[in-house]
Image 1 (cartoon, one colour):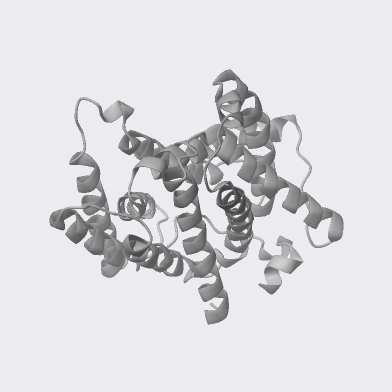
Image 2 (cartoon, one colour):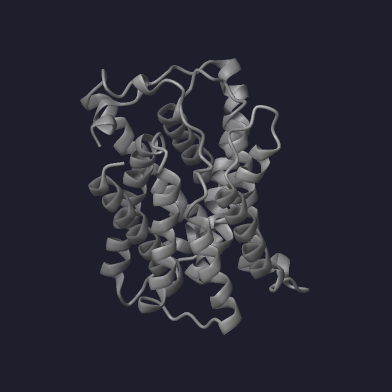
Length: 306
């Protein structure tokens, strides 16, 4: 992988996570259907502009009824994971958030090891996956109580489960649709679902009354988070084809988690910090949980240049 591309991707991922945390926690904008609806809408507009700017490079496979039925579970898992992740990040410190989400690639890797046509299993990756899963699970189990279902940790678990379900579903969904196609149609579905959901849950009306003393920072944060989210998605479509994408992504999230106390107040006991450090270090060798596209030639040309 190109070191410049890897560094740029790491910066996008880290800055995006920090800005999302700032808007959700520090500024207190806890309306996930509005926040994620805005992000997916902005991303969709960017993707649509790219298809207009270069139709030959950003080709989209048309969707029909059988394809929609095949992709529908993935749409639901994708949208639910967005909402759950937003609710979790608003109430969970970034080191815990990253550590628990590291159980996602660890779980997918361990599941792949039991498949009949499994890829070669390396002892380092296997040990790292087990360590990551145990430490991440321990951080969640330590928070289970009578009010767990109302806590941010509950939504963190929901986000991980839905993300895992989405990753597994992409392997059995209609093979005509590559990552770029799924990204585009996921965004359309999320916008269509989250818009009425925001009114049904009355978050749209509550958000209209949201005014912060640092309103300019709030607006700048919302714009930056949406732009960085779209950029991270576009970069991931291309970089995930590289065998080192998993380690680069996990290293980027690990560094972001370790440095997060410099940006946000993080009151974690020593034993939790120990689990976090072990978790993020162990996660680095684990391969990416995102499936590669079989036909790399179909990738958008501009992304290919990245």
